[in-house]
Image (cartoon, rainbow, N blue to C red; front, side, top):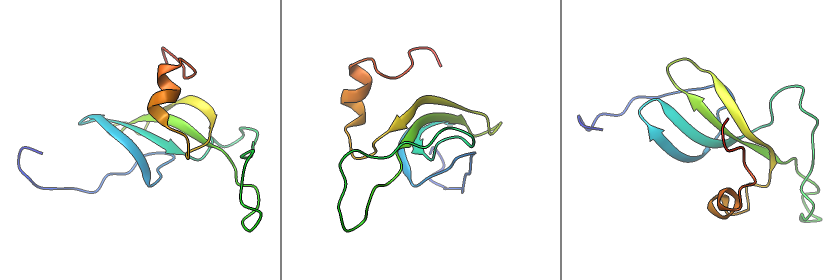
Length: 93
């Protein structure tokens, strides 16, 4: 950011729903559940689109590609800050 230049980044489980770049190497995002995780679906949905899978709240290190799932099943339509304040996400991932 200091230089004003941008560069593309990628990480495991990448999605377009990024909540925050915690620092230059850590991203907090909502992505698809980790492979092998049982799929759960949204409870309330449009009958025109049908049920959609819940996503996962995750953090990822850009330099290593490692990630940690904070919450395995999360509805991305919900307010993430309220969710975290209630203590429903893992405290020490």
